[in-house]
Structures are given as structure tokens and as C-alpha cells.
Length: 341
Image (tube, rainbow, N blue to C red; front, side, top):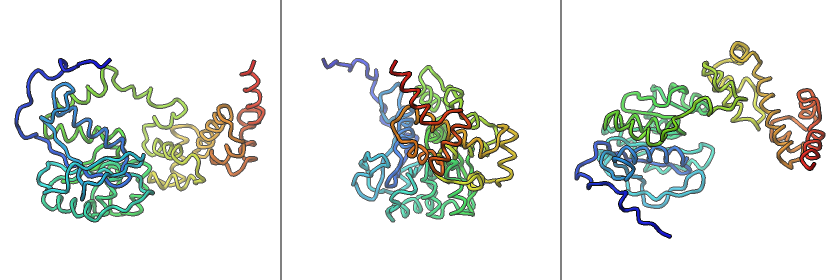
């Protein structure tokens, strides 16, 4: 039965005033949906008292060169609310990027719009790989750029004059702001709201998102990834890349280069902080993934070896037996026999 919740609405009408924070959002083809949703919903919560979605303190538009839907990397589409206007209609322009290896056919009008905005003195922000769009437009030359650790290497290689920062959620360098995306998009929204509307409004939205549970940092990281808790960001980022490239044949030297150090120095850091060599840590990570698949899937051992980054089936079986003192096939058989009893 449908209920009437109208009595839960605001007790008074919204004031007729211009919002102190107006944001123009630009999304590239194949943009990542979660960072955009986190960012926009924070503006929505900060923009009103309670959770009534009135745009009193914050206002926003999804902009494009036409009103055709923009497809995200997960397949969902969003329809722009406005064709590119005068950038000075907004206090900030935020470019939300997507996965770099997908269709990177970004309309020329998008570059023209953000270059014009920057030229007119409107602050421009790059979120997720939106920073690469700013770099391609020439807006990040010689500047610091907040970037996800997995993209720091590609950014450094493609744009050597840009300084990648992989341990900060928001970096403001002049009128250009960057954010690595993901949940850090909330920090980007907090930064904009705090500067335009005051910290109390940013704290209101942040508390509303978290409810009364807070954020348990310890609980958010699996015990097996103790390396992610390491205070040395090179080690933590290397471990993150190892998980990111779990199924790829990638060398420790490549991992080291991606986090801005040498293979020798990374080995020293792993021994210092984790008491294990990088290659051994990565192999343990792959073996744990293989063990889970042996016990919880019907994939062949050869397929598991391939998916967990081992050179072949024999390579996996050898290390599996040395670590767990049983072959993958025997462990699977025993597990299923025990489960049927």
C-alpha cells in the first residue's frame, strides 16, 4: 500500500536566492559513475537542511556540447541538463573522467569549454582521470596533480612536466584542482563546499552520509593486505598495484617504477616494513586468491593458474604444494567430500 510521506517535508519554503556554490559538471564518455555520484550527492546534501534536495546553498548542472545521453563505464547513461553556457555562470567547473583504456574519443567542444573557463579565471577541477583531460588541454603543465596510485606511472610517462601526488585526496595548484576519484570525490566536494558555504555545511553533509556509524579505517582493509596499512606510501601503493595487477604478468621493476622508486629500493622498503621481499609478498597474494578459487569455484586448475598470474599449471601446483602441503586438486576434493558429509 502506498503511503503519504508529505508530512515529512520541510517546514518552510526555500528562500529565493542565488546559491553561493554553483558547479558545472562535465563528464567524459565512459566516465566512472561512483565518483560522480559521490560528488553530486554531497552537493545535494550540503545544499539544503535535512535531506530535502532543495538547491539553497549548492546548485549544479551536467554540461555537454549537446543533450544526448553520456554513457558511463558501467553502461548507465546520464542526460545533460544544459549545453555549454558561459563558464562564468559557475563558481567551479569539474571534469569527471573515466577508464583510460576505453573509448577516449572526447569531443573537441569539451576541451574548448574547459580551456575557455580557465582563461576566464573560473577554477577548473579534474576528478578521477579527468585530470588527464586537463593535462591534454595544457592546464596542468608544471603543476602538482592528485592522481590514483595506479595512474601515477602513466601520468608521469605521458606528461613528464606534471608532478603526480598519490597520497592526497585533493590538490589545489592555483586555479586548477585535482582529485584521484573514488571515495576521495567526497573530499573534493567537501573542499568546494567548505570554501563557498563554510565548514559547518560541509560537516553537515559528511555526517549525514556516514550516519552514526562513522568510518572504521581498520575494518575497511582486509587483514591479508597489511601492506595497505603501511605508513610508507610507496609500499602501500605497490601493494595496491599488486592487487590491481593480480592477473597480469608484471615485473617488480615495473611496480617499483609505477610508484616512483627503483626495484632495489622497493625491496629494501618491503624488508623494512613487511619483513618480506616484494616478489614473495605478491606470490602469497596470488596463492591466497588461487586457494579461494580452488575451494569456491569450478574453474580448472589450469584456468586458476592463468587467472592468478602463474606462468602455467605446473608453476601454480609447485608453489601451492610448498605453501599448503597439498595439491590444489586434492585440497578441492577433500573440501567437497567433507562438505557432503
